[in-house]
Amino acid sequence: MHPDTSIASATAVSCDDALREPLALLEGRFAEGSVEVPGGRVSYRSCGSGPVVVLLHGISSGAASWLQCALKLESQARVIAWNAPGYGRSTPLTMSQPKAVDYARRLQDMLQALEVEQCVLVGHSLGALMAAAYLAHGDGRARRTLLADPALGYGAAGKQERAHQVREERLGALRTLGIAGMAQKPTRLLSARASVQDHAWVRWNMQWLDASGYTQAVQLLCGDDIAPYLQAAPRRGLSVACGAEDIVTTPEASEGLARQFELPFKLVDAAGHACYIEQPSQFAALISAQLTSTN
Image (tube, rainbow, N blue to C red; front, side, top):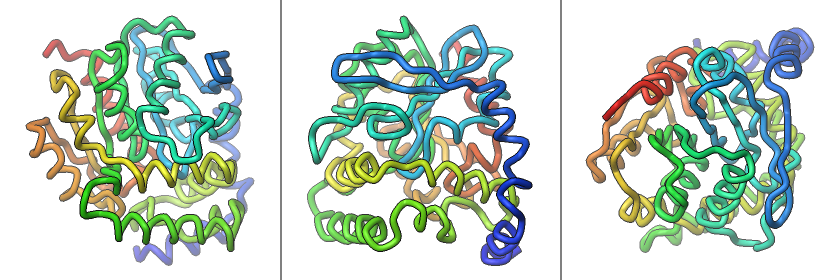
């Protein structure tokens, strides 16, 4: 099916019809909580019990987006999906142009406040950049880490022109469309085979973005680089995955990153960028393997 056909179908179905089931599950089984940390508050959603899995969302999403994946893990893990600073009810960072290490410090504060001594850390897209910074500069609570569809960042030397272009495109869309308009635009986050519910779920999560928090995240994306963090991070227990049909952070780019740092790499079949939304069972299986691995 052509992407535009799928998107048109999603538009034709009412939001209530497409989202009735996930919204009921969200409130009933993936409850929101918050914890006070130095500098403010971090909100998160959680379910399950057992070894801890911590999920970091990307730039156009939030904690709730992990719903289906989290529910597939709840029988074997305590799943904690944070809202990054400036997302959901989480207090934004104070600087206008934060780096990944600034988000990593807030993540460390959250883990400490929730008394998480050890976890499997999963970062998706921009969340992968934050996870990499935590590995390099955090306090070592991540036993294993999965970087999914990682955003490499545009802060490296030689990427200034592209960084300027991405910054202008994203912040220009925010100025002209606003959050509500951005959430209704056809998305590149899903593959052509994504369901009506997948499209509705991506849009529902996008509509809760905060303009200032999103702006800070754009500055992070355009002003930082994942490579130095991975160079400084321990490699043991670190791996990379990517949706096989991702056109945002492509399989080629993700595999290239894995190859550069000699990390295991896996594809999530039949999925675009938001692979954990399109293929929650496949993605949960990757996390489950991290939970049981002894390597």
